[in-house]
Length: 366
Image (cartoon, rainbow, N blue to C red; front, side, top):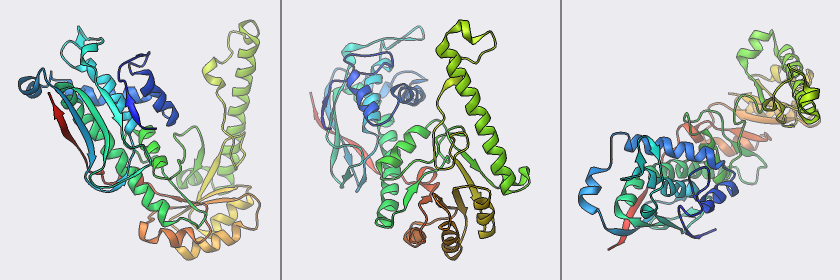
């Protein structure tokens, strides 16, 4: 979806324009969460006062500038960049008074989307055109580019992995090894690059790792303990939901509040509806986990030969899914995928991807 975005029109509760908010929603992003991230970034730039350099040199001028790719890659973060443009008015002269943010309508900018997230771009391609007062454009430049270069770098790296294993049936996934405060955006960038997200946090899926196994006294004991806790938690949520639906009279003074009534996601490994994945670092542990009823296994730091053996063992059971993890490299990605695993887990997508080089070039000035 390309074209003009009339920034700051129809501003809602999040402080961004209706069109920007809709673009974020369509992308699977929560507008309120994006606004928090963008405001935190803009706060860093404007904490110490206004942009003295731009005020002194370009005040009163209107400009048009293009965000241009300096190298080939995969784009991610355009809706976030539009949110930066929307919120920028709050940080210019008169945008903040007595600690309270207020509208600065005369400072509004407009963005024309020239390329969409997930699209491959080449060196020299313009991806976004920005028009507005020069101090506003320059004030937004670094924050806008920080988001675009970082997220596009993740998308570009993910696309390289996705291309490397194309046709094998395997899918590349991310991890929770993300930049604090940016997990939602970084995992969005993984999706833009053709990858799939692993769990978003600790509560939307269970991952039984080596320390859990050691503390529980073994693989089977850990699986049973997590299943029991998941079932207990789901029962509590269901009871809270029934109490809420029945009304305050039926709920009683000690009933759980509405925040406890959220859904538990279904998955391949049933434990009260919660996805349960267990980490195994040997074929022996794979056999033990399968014998305990586990059906989603993370194969940690196993060489290719062990992966093939684990896949052969698992195929004797119905509905088993396998994820290779630990020390994976792009050069060996296809060989790992061809063992028959369903997923390749790559933490480097979010913690080590190089930023894609994009810059802002002035196209015209009044």
